[in-house]
Structures are given as structure tokens and as C-alpha cells.
Image 1: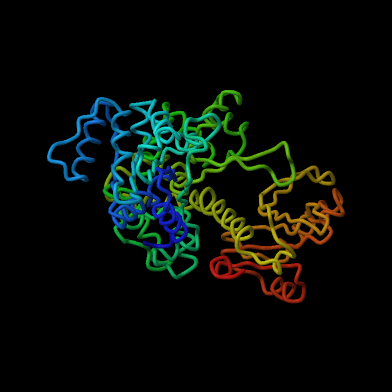
Image 2 (image 1 turned 135 degrees about the horizontal axis):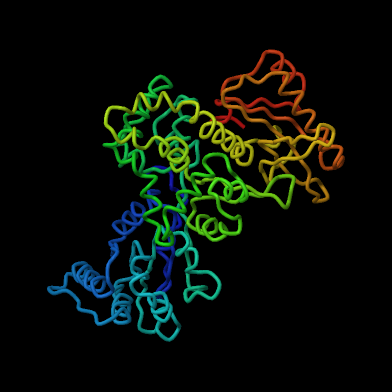
Length: 483
């Protein structure tokens, strides 16, 4: 097991809870994050019972469940349950020797075939039913984020019943580099821009094949990602197909393609698709619910926001692979096509991804000494310059609080993957800070300037940063190891 110390400790706490009544836990997270691995491990460690549901009919699911439960209890014949009321009632009585872990994986499949199942489990956990229950530690798991998120929300039957609500996240970029065994920071950032922090992509999908160094990155992309014989080649397409709430996959793929091609707001997405902006409310909301995109408020304009794709592989597919899909499907063309799409990869994938890494570093890794305070909000933003009648983009804006609790702007930053940053960048960012000070002198009085670069910094800017602590330079080694 790699990392997952927090998740394991929470599962262990839940599994060994000494209360004599049955208890409920919810485990969710995007696909390929290792949820089943964790649940199988806790089930094996405690001699528990684990049932993995399939997408089938209610009768067939009950039959499969009865067979699995009988095997676990060493019964000579399978249980033949008339309905889920009977099945759940029997399940709640199997912990005769103390707390026992019971895992139902892919729970959304069961609930789709039997919509009343959450209510049946709720009734089985009611005080009246607890008199006949044993200390079952029931864990419901699923990857359909929209469904799992609603299990405990609002007026849902199971609201208030769970003693565990665990979300298994993707690995952050630092942990992902360790997991892939990549020590070179540039190689790690390049790799993360394609496969992100999903553990299964290294072990199951790439079978341990990772780029050895920057020189091996391009060959690795050709052999492991753009190779039609490897699972990563079609993974981004399958991710949408596996979401039960996405019925019109063509529309959702088009929305994701619009975002991947730089259309971050609803108006831009609508123009790209040739649709009205109002037509996109539902698909955008559904994509958010299933964890495919994020919706982020502009740092300086409360009435403006942007959409970003949450899964790097999906961004890579829509920006790079989808437009040349026909060429890539022909074996032996990956290297040639990869060279042809390099400009697209640099501008639409790598550049935006490095900006996101810079924001993540600022929010979670940068020290108060670096920022001049503790950051509690980091975003990108834009503002209008009345003098030039142009807009100014800010890749990173870090906000904190002063002694009275008022929000202040700790730092603004510019992130460039392929540019060597110099004095021209400094003058431009100083101009942006002056504009912000004009708008709100108190908020931006002590705002620092941060430059993030994947290519390095000019000597003169390095000298200025050495002399002036309000100028911070962040390179790849600092993003991966420093604060």
C-alpha cells in the first residue's frame, strides 16, 4: 500500500469500533484510486465479508449476493432471498463473534436495479431493528460520485446514519512522482500533466512503465499513452461511459473538448459548441457532480468564474488525442503524430497544467515566510486596466487574513512553463500590483510577487530576488521539494 495512511487509519477505526450495534460507513472517490484495494485489505485483515456488485437485474443481484454470503458463512447451499429486506436482515446478523466488516462494493449498481435499497438499509439501522442486529460494520462503496454524494445529503434515507464518510482522493503531484518512481522534477511534471495522480495508471494500465528521464518522456508517451494496444489509449473515453448519470456522452465529450481547448467560461463553451449558453446549465452541472470538471470563482471578479477539467488524462485526450484520433488508431504512427502535436500539448495541456501546479504549491506547500502570511484561498483571476483598456491575467492570487480578520492579497504570481522569466515579466507583474493597489490600497499594500518557471530565471531577476524578499522565484525543484 502506498500512502493512504489516513484512509487506512479511518477504516481500521471504523472496523474495530466496539459498539454492539450495527454501524454504517460510506467510501467514495473517482475510479482507479484504489478504493477496492483498501476495502479488500481491511476485509481480509478482519476476516470480513466483501461483495462486489455488477450491473445486472435485481433478481440476479440477489442471487449473486446469496451465493457470496453462503460461501463466506460456509453454508452448503446458497441463500435464496425473496427480496433485499430479507437479504439485508440476514446480513445484519452475521457478526456473532464481535465486530465484522461487511463491504458492498459498486453499491450504485445495486441501487440502480433496486432503488429502495438505501431505504431498506436505513430501516435495518433504525433503533427498533438494532435489537436483533449484530455489530456489523457495513461499508458501502462506489465511484459514481453524484450518486454517492447524495446518499447522506438532504432528505436521503441514510442521512445521519453513517459513522464514516470517507473520500479516497487522487494522489497529489508530489506523491504521484514518488508513486511513479520519478526523481527528476521536470519528468515528474510532464508525466503528471498526462496521467495525474491516479494510482491504477501506473500499475495496471502502464504495468510499471514510467519515463526514466526527460529524454525518455517522448518515447514513453508514444509507447504507453498513444499506443492503441495499451489501456491508457482509450481510458479517457471509457471514463465518461462508466458514469451512470451521463446519458448523452457525445454532448459531454463536446463540452470537455471546449474546455480543453481554452474555453473556460460558459459563454465561450457555448460559442465553441454552437449552442445557447442556457443550454449548458445541465451538462455542466452533471460534469461537476461526477467530478470531471471544477467550477472556480475568479480571484478579483465575484460575478465571473471558470471551468477546468479535473482529470489530466481527460484534458490530454480532448486537446491532443481526439483531433488526431484517426491517425493514432493506425499502429506505428504514434511517434510521428506526437511530434506533430507538440505545439498543442505545450499550449493547451502543459502550460495550463503548470499554472494549476503553481496554484496547488501556493495553497498547500508555500510557507508563511514565502507568502508573507498564511494563504486560505488561492485562485486565478483577471482585471481590467482602464489606462490601456486591456485585460490583465493573474495566474496565481493568494489571499489571507490580517489581524482584524480582513481579507488581504498576500501575493500575485505569473507561471510560465517554457519561458525563462526576466525583468520584463517583473515590470508587467509590478504594473498589475499597482493597479490592484489603486483599486484597494489596504488589501494589496504588502502584496508580494511570485514567479513560477519550468525553464528558469534571468540572472538580473535572480539578483533582484536575492535583495528583495517580496520577490519570490519558484522553480521545479522548489515546487516538488521546497516551501
